[in-house]
Length: 64
Image: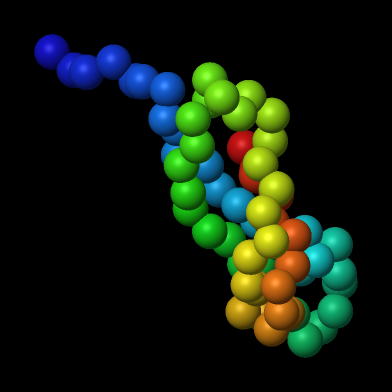
């Protein structure tokens, strides 16, 4: 039998600066995988992380 899902879920964080620009220089969109506890933080997560395409720290938001 399989185990229950539990409170921790896998989430994807995506750079909002890369997603909103339509520049030709942009090589892609920076994404990170992380986990969160859905019982303690039910809202979407927002973290400052380094974007290798923008080459600076930008806001990364949780996507579905």
